Length: 311
Length: 311
Image (cartoon, rainbow over all chains, first blue to last red; front, side):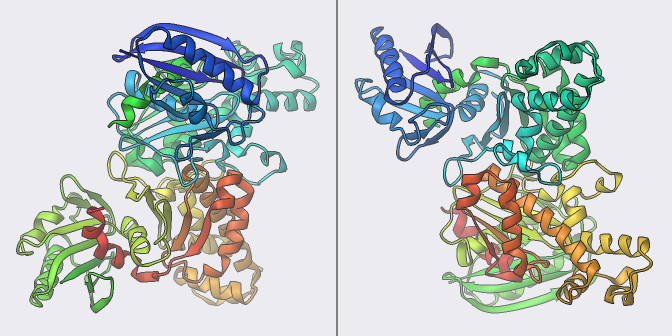
């Protein structure tokens, strides 16, 4: 028998059939095409119905880009209009023909994916730091996901890392403002406006189109602006991971999300920066590693949800 | 029957007999008088033997000011020479006549004490922030203590909260340097040296004797230096608790240790400062409260250890 895994993003729905041993038997991807509310739900339901025709599925797991309320089976997904309190489990079970459906947040699924088939396989205490458009963490404690009192734990993009507080942190948090993919782009745009004398490669990209990947390309070419922005990010990533290490004393910090990616070569520098700040014994014992599963981490985790809940 | 609880400090050993319902039947305190190594152990053992004569003790719990390795039963206590890897459980069980002995760190015991008989009784997710000479946290997640891979979790005094890194943080961490009892005193001494024109009440205390309590007294008298130092602390306590709230999404942050204490009236200001930085939903749901048990929090927690381990 096999597992159907779904990874719902803000703009697309990735899906795959996994063998119970963790091998991908087939995979699929659909764009949401701006679907909202029940239409977004209908797309997921039709995907489930399609895969169930294979007759080999005996469990279903879905990774959700938002907050999953496990007790009620509802989700809050900021990027899908109408999903403020969407009854995802009820909706999906209406088409799953009695096959159990499990869900978790994409960040929780990412650490579970790494635990099942990636770089956290030997860990009971590990943290997946996802740095993409935003920043969040999937946190495994003694083999269990940290959820918090309202299922919002792991919101590390809100970490306070440098004084003073500024108004611009209100919408996203200090850490995310400075060191997320969107943050990197935004800070670069601000810098370009303030420094008219700069004539490097980033000046040739129209300001509103600049993204984190442009920065990393310019960094590799030793562009002064890119070096400045990325070194600042390394400092923030170092402080944030130091805090996670001092607080949780984990076995591993695993870096994923779209930025890791191109920032993977910086991990040794981030660990060096973290070592300045963190509890000395904890930092000497922890390993900093990139995700082994990359963009598939949450999909693997979604596949492992029913398996993991039995532990 | 009854529980014998012991709270080992850096300089004294507090002990009490609790009824199983949590009432203190009798209590006792001894100074360590500089005892180290096996002599410190002997003092605890003779205390246990003394209390066992009552014939009513059926479990023993001890709070330890350091790291407790639960698997090996050994402890690391920096303030007691020779206790780098002291076999505390073995030693105490050698005199306990078959009565089970449980131990945990003082910070873990403090949150367990608040959970048993204090302000965390209705919580499964709560954090005790202990601000005394140093800073640490006892963290309860879904009713269980967070330990980490090497039993060092909760070392929040090492939290990185403000750039740049300075050499002076190496021995204690950025947060502890600025906002512990010892930190408050140290920063005041530095300030007095730099500002010779200051003639307020803190100038009348010999510099090396200034402690956090002097600062709070001067703060209450609206002394300019004390206001400056304490407001800086409020800012650090706000950022640190904001980070704990964003990361853990707890039901309560409970403030204890010697500084809370005199800093209890500042808790609303700390929460206001925290609200600037933290994940907005999590901070709107959390309660900031003082310890209900004060200096007895760890003693209550030690009493609850055998009870709690059965949950």
